[in-house]
Length: 183
Image (tube, rainbow, N blue to C red; front, side, top):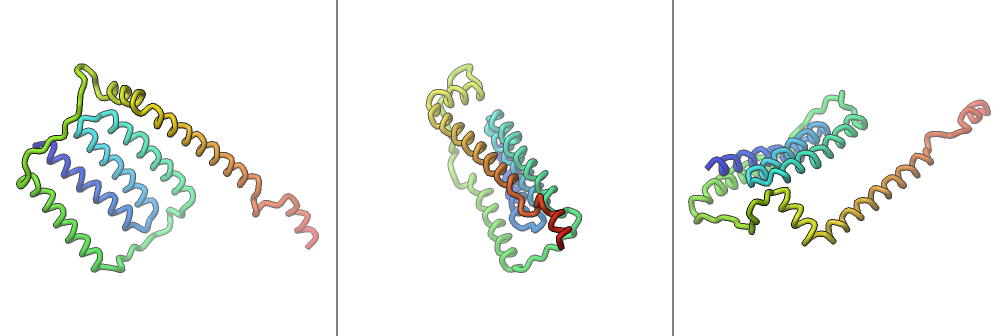
């Protein structure tokens, strides 16, 4: 019973946060809501008793969004006031009504369906983290290694591209002083 209530609470909060992400014109509000939404998504993992994945969700995704938040604070003018205007009120009202109907259908679905449970094979005396390691390093070893290699290549490519942009700066000219004196 508590799991169902927690599921609906996390669902509503997650949908609310991601709605703010989509509707907000202020980048910092959107990034804050995105981080909150990712933290609420980790709540689903905790409900399913997958604590390891919940903690990974918080540390990896929310940590990445906090790095994005830091870059957003550096690149955007955060002191500027943003006036948000909802131009399409009919669309907003329609989305609100459809969301309310969807929430009503979701809440009433358990009343009309039979008891459905997802089962998965378990090994006695093996916890979540050990089971993830067992599956990851046996069945999914090759895709795991390929993903690691692809991330390594992407990281090296990003460093190379960033270093090329640092070498060529169109606003910086070594002969700027000489050009000022000639004029």
